Image 1 (cartoon, helix red, strand yellow):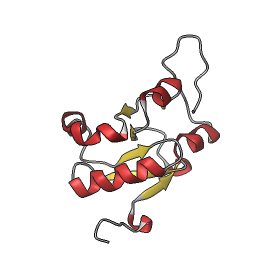
Image 2: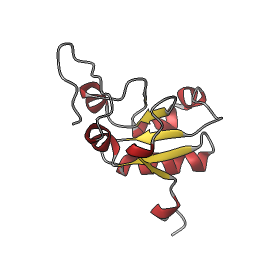
Image 3: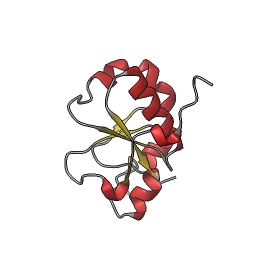
Length: 120
């Protein structure tokens, strides 16, 4: 039971509450999801790679929240718990993930030339 964290204890925000300027976004989706469509300026570290990515994580700011995002909010909730328990950054889960990001009309870019960005 010690490892179970009450989801209510995970710091969470919605896409509509995210600052439009200066927010640090950490995308924990897989590479194919990232390539298809992601937020401009986001940092990409797949969930499974987080424990091995201490150098990349150390580059994230520690003076303001890091907003963790995935497709719908499940993986980012796990990443937020891990990051906060490791004390690496002040992580905040983005509820609804990139699906909500797209629905809210936030900007998207992709890694495929000539393709429209999409959220897989």
